Length: 416
Image (cartoon, rainbow, N blue to C red; front, top):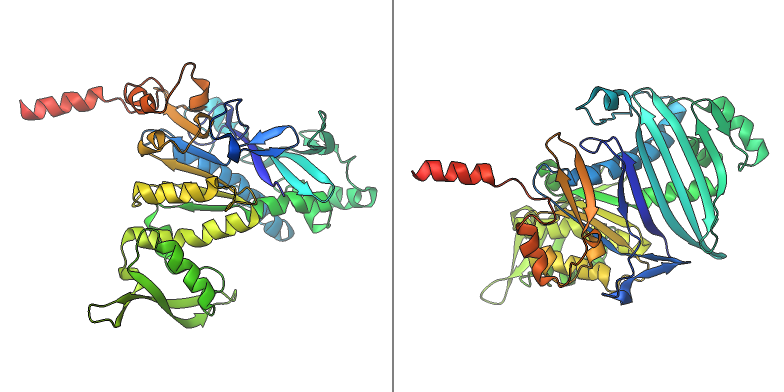
């Protein structure tokens, strides 16, 4: 089925003060047409590569999505316990109006059902006190008009799209920090569960964060401890760039409370006289560790057709590995469920490698007031071949590049 993110929109979050849209709708461009997925009239892309200078806000796009995802999934867990304080919201802080204004998060995504394709539109606004607005709409992919399931505003609650006997339950239990979406999924309302499951299936990881990396290298894909098949899949995957690993030696140290296994993983290598030698996984290169950690995320998403978000995909990864990962998502024969990848990178090689379409390349830029904007390469008129993308980028024609003047000035002073 086609379960795909069509658009993510947010406003007043971290360095993004104004309305910001990451759009997966394909332009009319014929480039790499073969891998565009179709949901009704929508033509949907597989990838979004976000480029930009350091501190231009590219990570904040992923953080905004993470915030929305965590708010939805933790509101489910917490709404029973009435836990306050999951709302660690960071609005745009550089002007007084935005500081107290609400932040908005919204998604459009498609869900394939036995009866055809449905497009959902879900969003909410929150401020320091809780949820100020929330809405859920849906339509058949071929329809023009959305059906409202519910709308909640400052002084308004319209639950007309919800079964009548559930409406009372929702009205009674609704707290200002609770999402109606979460309550509805508790009450087993099917469309609510569909939306929540969509959020829960997506995966986010940040490779710029050493703590997160450390944790990831101890996690193994499902079934890794007891299935040789799974281990061999991982060997095959790692062999695309490191053929020295020929197997694994896995020992289960203990299972924690959630039933997650703590593993001691060693890698098997051939030694010079034909035998094998074991190395602790932690002694492998950064790149191998990162690829090992990424394996389970990529597998999860490819199997489910969900969205993988990776901050700093190119941090400690060779560009060819990044290319391999992208090709996995780009190949319709491998990616049969239309999984998508959103990643940030500061590697200009992404512009040159002829893998990405123009509408899959995004830039973040931050102005002198500290306000970030997000825009796509497809927004620029007259961008022809990918050969001059990089040159134009370096000339600053797409913005999104740090101001080099000050740096040059410093360099010169030093030598003088």
